[in-house]
Amino acid sequence: MALIECYECKRSISSEALVCIHCGAPMAEHAAMQAKPASSSTISFGSLPRNKAVPEVSIAPTPEPLPKVMPAATGRRRRQEAAQQAQQPLNPDGSRPVEGWLKIMVFLLPMVFVWFLLRNGHSAKQRLFGFGWLALLILASSLSPK
Image (tube, rainbow, N blue to C red; front, side, top):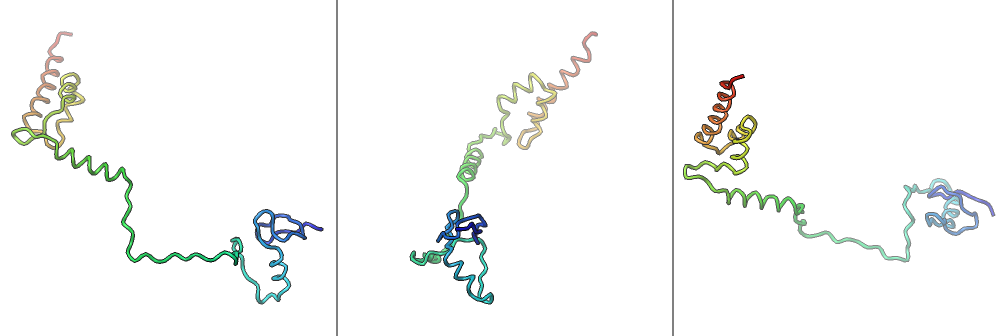
């Protein structure tokens, strides 16, 4: 008994083994193929040999293409965006309302948050109040005694 190299996985196995203990490749068929002339050799790409006792399974082609699958989050996000656009109330003049957090932050830190009033949808009146408050604070700080 000698150690030989498996033709599939290239590991050492017994010369008396019928199949490779590592990959399951049949050694008896390989020995028979080596005895044949070189003109009828086959090329192996590392796949396991097929078991002829097990019937082959074929997949029937589908008559119609399957529907496009999208992640659940994509559909949920689109529905939420549509609901937000539908729910967003407008002022009587058609402008969007200034959110509560923005009113507070423009009052406390106008130098930073007044710029949010430049977004689409805010009216000129809302912008005038915001930038007017900023100008008033700048004027008050420049007139204060040093």
